[in-house]
Amino acid sequence: MVSSGRLCLLLLVVFLLGLHHSTGFWIVNVVFPPNAKSRIPSNSTPPLIIVPGKLGNRLEAKIDKPTLVHWMCYKRTDHWFPLWIDLNMFMPIGVDCWIDNIRLVYNRTTRQSSNSPGVQVRVPGFGQTYSIEFLDYNKLAGYFYTMVQHLVNIGYIRNETVRGAPYDWRLAPNENADYLTKLRDLVEEMYEKYQHPVYLLGHSMGSHYVLYFLNHQPQAWKDKYIRGFISLAAPWGGAVKVLRVMASGENDGIQVVSNIKIREEQRMTTTNPWMLPFEEVWPKDHVFISTPTFNYTNQDYKRFFSDISFEDGWDKWEDTKNLTGDLHPPGVEVWCMYGVGLPTPVTYIYNEEFPNVDPVDFVYADGDNTVDSHSMSLCKRWAGQQEKPVHVTEFRGLPHLDIVFNEKVLNQIQHILEGKSDAPEEIDVRNGTNL
Ligand SMILES: *[C@@H]1O[C@H](CO)[C@@H](O)[C@H](O)[C@H]1NC(C)=O
Ligand SMILES: *[C@@H]1O[C@H](CO)[C@@H](O)[C@H](O)[C@H]1NC(C)=O
Ligand SMILES: *[C@@H]1O[C@H](CO)[C@@H](O)[C@H](O)[C@H]1NC(C)=O
Ligand SMILES: *[C@@H]1O[C@H](CO)[C@@H](O)[C@H](O)[C@H]1NC(C)=O
Ligand SMILES: *[C@@H]1O[C@H](CO)[C@@H](O)[C@H](O)[C@H]1NC(C)=O
Image 1 (cartoon, helix red, strand yellow):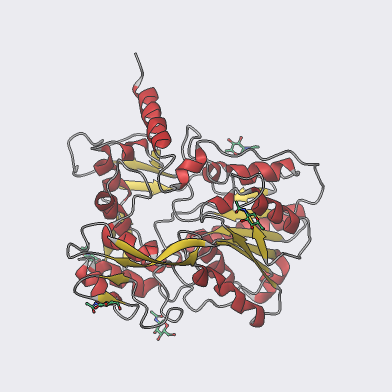
Image 2 (cartoon, rainbow, N blue to C red):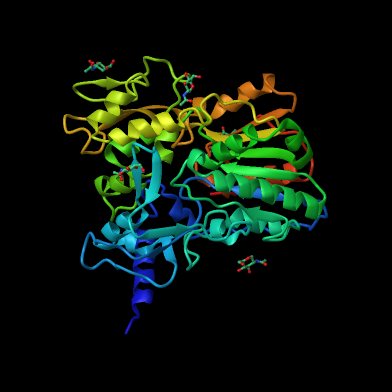
């Protein structure tokens, strides 16, 4: 006899192993996380707060729903249960229940998002690290685990000198005001407790959250409380991939969930329109999506949303495009790191069945296989725009998600936290011991 919990776990493991050679979903990294090697402990452990990327921390839900999408879905629970990552999303009917629980409802009049009717969602573990280290309770889906363990090896203490600032990543900062207040309080608390200004570290969309946060604090506050901002793989000019995700979906290699199915969930979140390629950054004639009937540039977003039957997307984009769209400098010392040297789609080509099929072809540019390097390199412009130094390091051959656990990146982060500001312009990760 196998208990159903065990069975789910077993199925998950089978799926994950099956995926190992597919197109790099980050969960994969997770099954065999590389071990951080123990280093000589040091006393210099300035406080660090990690802001994860989209999908990068756990969410929990409690439900008492008026209607069900399928009779097999739960209608009511007395306890908080995992919503992300929820093992049900890997099951044929479970995925429908899951989407109906995690989706947001957007009201075009109030321009506000709310949870699916009868669903409460909370973010566990603010100020601790477990919610960003592993995304599931069985500790299969590791994310920041390797980095945090590396930091612990050099003298950091979990939940003390290194902490996570998880958030509801379905929402953009304009709908997450409470989070930004909590983040400010956490910075001040750690500053007082450890008597040292705090480092903020963001990954991917988390870096946009950090930028938005810093742009909304007075310079005097930043000078006092913030030692620096370490940004990993931030799509500063937006990400072309977001257009594909909204048009036809992207399961990131989870073969059991079809792209078109996962699209339902992906369209519900506000953060996807926020990360559309920013208007000023791309040439007006660059085609992001090419179909037999139309070529879509950044001048055609209204038509794009209309053609993919996702009109709310246009409103959500209008609500969020100015949040970090002007890339106002953060006003603190910055270490901007990202991967380069990997082919990354910058144009998706569809056949006449657009948007209900996967793209049939791609045009590539340089990047980290998820975001192009032009977008990620835009942090370079801050060098001339703020007094505090801006250091940019490109990691040749480093994929988007690997940046949170690659050993050369972790060594560079350690170097920064030990107070050594200098950063090389390029580090090649293709040679050496890591994978
Ligand atoms: C949107 O919000 C307005 C104002 O609160 C409300 O009157 C309207 O019913 C809402 N629309 C939907 C579809 O819920
Ligand atoms: C950090 O906090 C979590 C949740 O309270 C706890 O499970 C974990 O043991 C703590 N870690 C340490 C090292 O204290
Ligand atoms: C889209 O652009 C491609 C490449 O420039 C061109 O060959 C094609 O004719 C264009 N399609 C439309 C519908 O304008
Ligand atoms: C966004 O910024 C543009 C250009 O600075 C401005 O014209 C527009 O009114 C702003 N939109 C919102 C919603 O703030
Ligand atoms: C290792 O580095 C050298 C020079 O830095 C480069 O020529 C070579 O292609 C790299 N090897 C691999 C496997 O990428």
